[in-house]
Length: 189
Image (cartoon, rainbow, N blue to C red):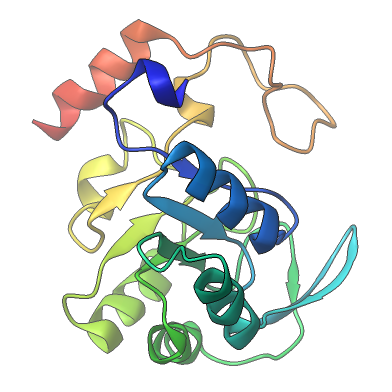
């Protein structure tokens, strides 16, 4: 894919495998990676994950990948926050620790972030880049983009209906609908 497009690409390897993500990104010349847990401590279905920004920065330097940006979730979805604190504290800590962009999510795939939390993050971080990491659709995109600089969108653009008991609401087999993409883009304009 990387050799077939001029689009900017990024890499995310779950759950929090920043070493693989950075290594793949460097190999394919991707511009950024996504790190679900950078400064927080969370409990997931896969165990407890503790952010380790110093380890991320050291590994990025070790492999000569300092040009790869770090897009980091704060108080990530699909997880219970163990170091309970206001989201703006996580945001400021992530910036201080070396994040290049913040990702704000709802509680689950398909859930938009709480607007009050998004506004609190924007007020705390000024013009630092914020992306919406879940729940963006044609009905809320303009409101969310009042406080964010962009959005990661997938679920609302997929064909078909939601799947019951599917952790990601829609399966990987459900394809992105060009018509839904066109509708979302038209809504933004």
